[in-house]
Length: 421
Image 1 (cartoon, helix red, strand yellow):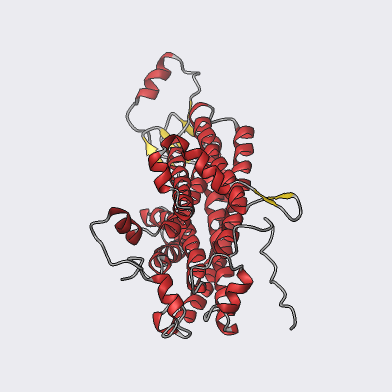
Image 2 (spheres, helix red, strand yellow):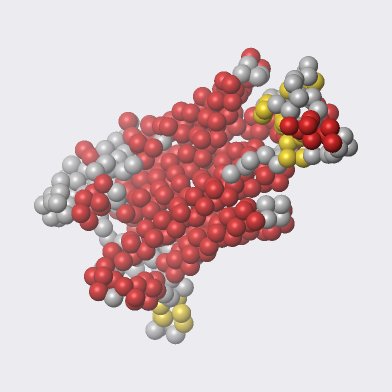
């Protein structure tokens, strides 16, 4: 009975959707001169935004997938150099080159696509018009890079059998790593949950979802600062018409149309003709930040669950719920090296501490979006801290996923030299 409902992993199920809609959305925008004011163009931009953000969890699932097909056993004490040397997949130089370039191209393409969407979301209308051609050209090149990376990934599967079970016909260790050691028990709730939602894979994928929502939240927060809605006497048409006399865009670039019947704004101006009004558009940045907090918190709790399971703490947590923070900290705290008489900075410690910071920072950003949405300096500072924390968290997570729990934070553990006999 497989230990996971979808084998070998979720990556193959997640990659098609972001790639497909991102490519189609980019083509729609590329040929947008054929339908400048059509809702078809609006749909294309939605596809670009959703595709770019959905590519983030798909890429994270790919990071897990590379780890999944590389480990032929559950021995977590091996470092990355030893895993590569022992893996029947990665020790083939041709396969390793395909997977290395696939991972590199897709990671760069996903990052660039997310950056393009972030800039577009956070820019004012005037800046969007100025950057439109540049961002479109970057996006076209990025889609080309993503297509090349996808080709390498498909080639590794269909020509080299990466991730296909017959590659390991006689490898009992690999089968043991992917098969349950106990009979299937569909009445056992924990077993069923772990079968449907493998904890580590879901943790990595949900981290990608949370980061995607965080990027959207950052863009919306800056959009709330840069965008304005002008209230005018006569309806003006732009690429986007809101309702009646309220439209978006810069006045000098708008074209006037025939007057419409009087509105409530005109009624106000009958009492005060010199009244100047400016209305801020509805940008749900605060709601997106709250969603981000929930996703970040859920991902953090998922990591705590993995720690508790790996260190067999679930029974102790159930018996002593008040001691849960202490039990978890004892599992991830730094350890002393008796030989060198110094403290080793545990990678799990860094991952745990930074993960907690990533949960807290969106809470401040949500409060800022709700109570002080115009504070550009504070928003920029908190955004920078969040980006820094997420970058560090992803890197340490990669070290934990591929390497071991102990070692330097800046690079993988070095291969152990074999002494000559």
